[in-house]
Image (cartoon, rainbow, N blue to C red; front, side):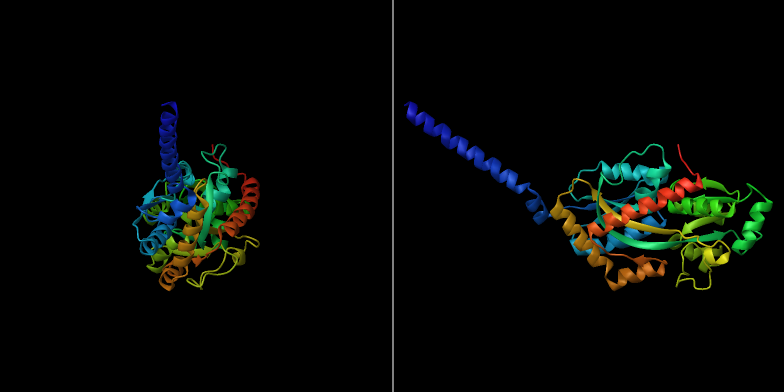
Length: 333
């Protein structure tokens, strides 16, 4: 009797063990990647709708919907220079169903600018690939009495504190572009942060603020329509989309250069096979002619790379911008 009972228990244990093994196998990284994706994917955008980060996320998201066979939706979480959205993405379940459209601000500037960060830009994220680089464009309301960098500097020095420049938020690249300009020219400009480029642009168009260093994709349409005056671009070379607009460096501020970039991330513990699958899918859609065209029309350049290349780029950018922030004296509590 004892022997028979022992055999029964052993068989039951074997059955339970086999069931647990099957369950563990089904939830292994390889199995998850094989089944991925099986439901909608969300891209958290850390700025308001209508800005460059949002525009790029929607272009890529639309193409990924077709590529992955699942809806890709955008969730705007604006505030604190991208830190609110960044914190939400960092804390999301690392299963590949929550992605983050990060920026030079969230992943290379904010850590030096903010005294306290709600996430670690390196430890809390798995880089997937850069998406695009774009120039920032210095634009002014038509009512301002200047059309060139030289005249703007002269006006700012004659009227200290009168020129206000808006930005998508403290730490965003347009903000630091303005701080760099202020530091290199010795001008007194008043920074006015917003919760995204779109609300800042609304106030600029309405004349509530004087100028803006904005990402080109969210400003170029207003330049083309004549609603804003293009003063200069922040990159080392002129933009092919606005070839008649000079750079700040060639306009009397030698050495000035500031470029914005945007990239896709997943939470840090996302399984490696899912990260690899996402990288492959995003790189594929970024190389599609229609996606390249949409981004180019906004003044951006597509960048498709490996996660390792993106991680190395972020490291170099963090070093670069920490120096810029230190030299400009900018800080946010």
